[in-house]
Image (cartoon, rainbow, N blue to C red; front, side, top):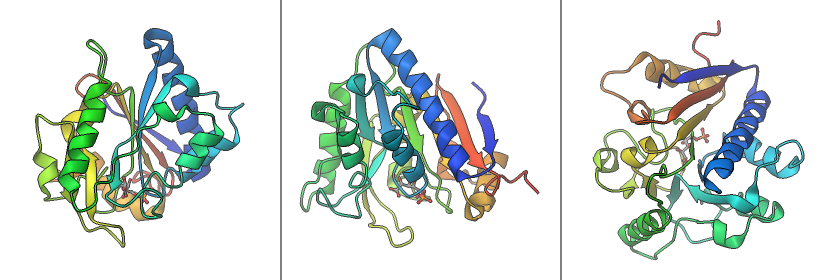
Length: 242
Ligand code: 6PG
């Protein structure tokens, strides 16, 4: 399926469009399979989306009771650490009444990153149902270096096959480098992948990814086998916007 690119005026409009898509995809998944499994993205871009879903549940009625929440990647830090991707999201999910058993943070295993990755692999494999996609939706961001999730350029996790989750190390801004991440095959096994990209700082890298950079940037490896690929961007990040 060809990738879809939608350009919105600003980051708030991107968040609104993303929330509407999540409502639609979640409703369809619950109608057909009785559940909706989503892997959330980290970083700062989706913050507006997460707050919108939590602050306006009437406008964005996700079937949270039937929703299983995962993370596409996590920094290997203790639960509650401000450097983790789930720390700011967990209270929002609690406010939405998402059952605790439906929320699957990436484990933290002190001093053993590989064990944390293996544990998350088991968590994901434990919820697989034959004939269903691994995940209904994977939310992703885009780093200025072309990384997505914790798949950083030139790092081993990029080439992991046969596994759903890998450990990795990647330096990016001031963020903690030890990571647990979905692998490329795991993301590409999703029914839908939605990138959220906003801000002028992402324009150059987005242009490279969309045009097909050589060598391929990590985000270019995201090509769902049978699922949908949607890029939701704002004008500031859109390479086509003058
Ligand atoms: C992480 C994210 C990462 C993020 C990009 C973009 O753990 O940091 O999963 O892949 O999506 O780095 O981050 P921003 O949205 O903050 O630009």
